[in-house]
Length: 237
Image (spheres, one colour):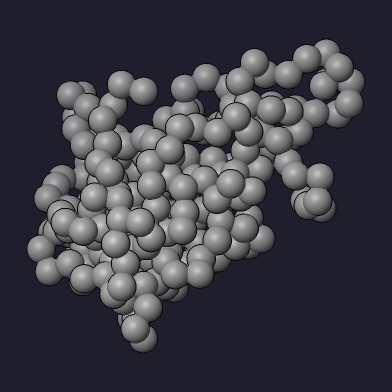
């Protein structure tokens, strides 16, 4: 992958935003780490983020950056506790700002509601075309740098929680100009089949009812090539 991204393990120690909340009892050994993309995924999600969906910490609608848009694509292997992310922002102007260790998050929050961040991602960077982009894979346990009731808001969180109820999770990014959020969107599960990632399956796979991940109608997704996803046999979804 040609785009560089920040190490969140390092960011757990040295925060990149003013006023960041210090972690309690958490160092690099207990923070998420950057890892290679796994061979398979158990689920995938997307969010088309807009400024109109932003709410402040009290749940009051607080429109973000006018004209901005964001596409967030997440691929999850909950067996390995790995999430791969492809984020693309248009019309969002840094600097980023958040009490968390980065300003780009998945929050446990239903539509129109506030909620704590559960995962913090590297903030997107200019790719030279005017877009801000970020891609990579992180493995938990996850930390955010936000401490509530003495615990980091990522503590105890697992990716299986997203798989169980994706509509209860939102993703966003925060800037100095739009501290409540420049754009925000709710996670939506992308229909998946049962083949492994990579080659795209075989005729035998197709005969068995497996299918590639569909990205039709999601042309803005920042996912290179077709993505195939394996569901765990233990899930009924």
